[in-house]
Length: 338
Ligand code: ACO
Picture 1: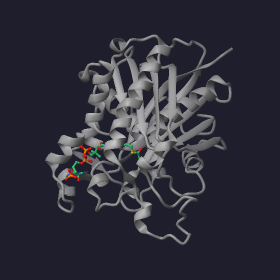
Picture 2 (picture 1 turned 180 degrees about the horizontal axis):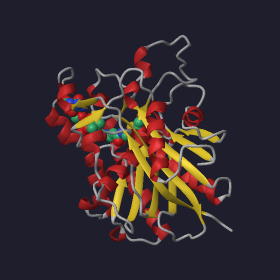
Picture 3 (picture 1 turned 45 degrees about the horizontal axis):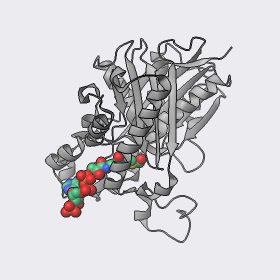
Picture 4 (picture 1 turned 60 degrees about the vertical axis):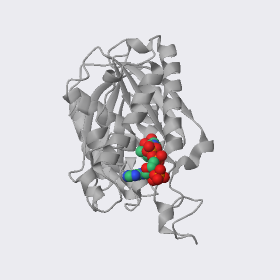
């Protein structure tokens, strides 16, 4: 019998080090007023020295398992997918070590690299593995230490990004209409825009060990305005096609949980979809752009604040480097975020 993937657990973790706009204004030619008005961000967390993506992922993974009523032990899940653009090492993937540290046994574990769209890509892939009968339960984590990619002297990127991790547990259920079932997914990419938000060095094209050793090549560079325009149109098109597939009108959606990249991107997206701005889930003011961790962090915050309740029709929408984008529709389940 075909199985369907349903959300049963949700958890998040932030590193303790808080970096406010005023902190950044002390060393950069910027201000709380500029950052808050242009992005919606007031503060973000950055990892402390020595704290890596895997460390944040383990904490969020623990919490999501707890939220799902599962102990971190062999048999809890049969796959772990870690969406990240800041792995602990270029080789190997970070996911196997996270699985080992969580005590999950010799399960399949792999990283998903789709920048800020990573969590949506990972959820869609995990759901497909469940539907294909390859997995019964999957732990999906989005975790980032974006601060490790930043040139802290570059005001155009340093003020935008934050670190954190969020995680979800998906389980197989026989009922396609059960609460929490991922009802439809839409994924897309356009690699002709690969250099609109990218790290030039450190990969095979400009290896850290090769002749080009410009330290600036190992930090994130972004053409903000172009990324902004793509983010709005690509997410709007993705959500429109998703809604067509699931049979909902924009007005039927109770909560739109978009990638927290910039509050102006999210309000422009809402306008384009003719979706009420007050139904957007927003936590960018507190965490900044946490890339692949953004959507599970926003979901966890929204559950904690009572902004997401069982039965709500929810749409997740993400956009990121690649360029990559994606969206997912689900009816919100009874869930306690940890
Ligand atoms: N403080 C003060 N001034 C600044 C700052 C700052 N932190 N940053 C830029 N400025 C200045 C610029 O130098 C420019 O000055 P000028 O007019 O004298 O040249 C002016 O502000 C306007 O710059 P813009 O880049 O046009 O500012 P914009 O309003 O577009 O905001 C921002 C920039 C916030 C980056 C916006 O474009 C944005 O959010 N883009 C999308 C980012 C995104 O979605 N990223 C996700 C993908 S990344 C990934 O996947 C890893």
